[in-house]
Length: 120
Image (cartoon, rainbow, N blue to C red; front, side, top):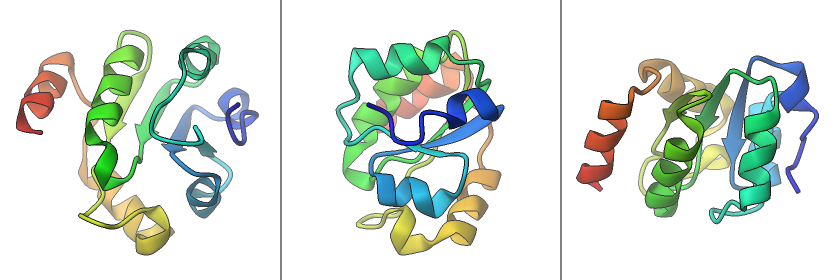
């Protein structure tokens, strides 16, 4: 199950959060996986969708899962991985502050993602 799955067919880019409340904070383009352990079905649903860009907004404790997911999506989608400040999530920061974090980052290349994985 993906919360707000319809957004995958309606928008070119989506915000992938862990929880539905975080996705609601991000607005119409917010989708949620229901946790940091995203299933193969959920990954395949995103891959099969026409969406072009996925911005991963997992909580601070899910950095490894966010990077692993980015590796799964990267061959077919443009991906950004946004690390939330320690102990914070989208709801703590709010939509505007989260969007500022997103706009500061660029979409990742494979080499950049490998370097990011080594840092965590």
